[in-house]
Image 1 (cartoon, rainbow over the protein chains, first blue to last red):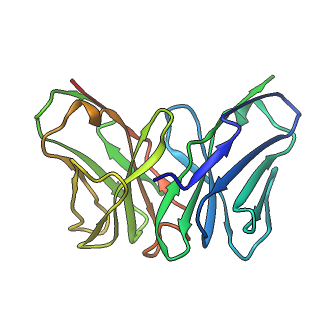
Image 2 (cartoon, rainbow over the protein chains, first blue to last red; image 1 turned 120 degrees about the vertical axis):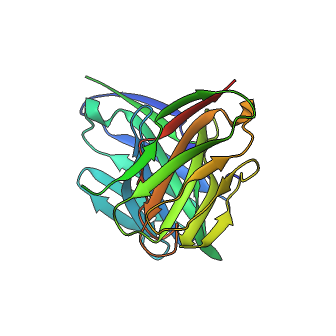
Amino acid sequence: SQQGEEDPQALSIQEGENATMNCSYKTSINNLQWYRQNSGRGLVHLILIRSNEREKHSGRLRVTLDTSKKSSSLLITASRAADTASYFCATDYFYNTDKLIFGTGTRLQVFP
Amino acid sequence: EAQVTQNPRYLITVTGKKLTVTCSQNMNHEYMSWYRQDPGLGLRQIYYSMNVEVTDKGDVPEGYKVSRKEKRNFPLILESPSPNQTSLYFCASSFFNSGGNQPQHFGDGTRLSIL
């Protein structure tokens, strides 16, 4: 069962522009995570945000969480060609933090 | 170097021939899990383990087996592989006994093709 869905499915921007990706999920959660995957490689953890947090920053990354709308966004500022990758959100369930459920991802292409 | 190591990285095999994909982590993590990644479907969890001798089904466990006899190893076993198990497989691990509230460390993946 799919818990999270990213939007858009694909995004193309120029270097220096900001990239915003959205994630919507279906049921209440305790935690939401964002991961990056370079083509065919393993996923790399970016940020974990808990349900009682609204915003979190890490370098050029900003994540927001709106539990009332069951949605999160990932903002990458001043993007670089090296940011080209797929980005996934992943959530647990409110009553079960054992499992991590991934969305289908947003494919980001940053042109030099 | 802290890492999750999967072997093999690539494998082409035939239907029905038993295979094992190994996963080992050197971070003393309690939690380990297996995912498969298919185009348009994202990552789907196959099995997870919260500690030695504790395993549980994920969302797509059919056709797979796992074991957790040692803390560092979590092999994925396909007893009788079929073509619909052709996929990219990832092993991941984290501290504590939860997948949801800890960052997961992923291996580089194993690409399986079953003919």
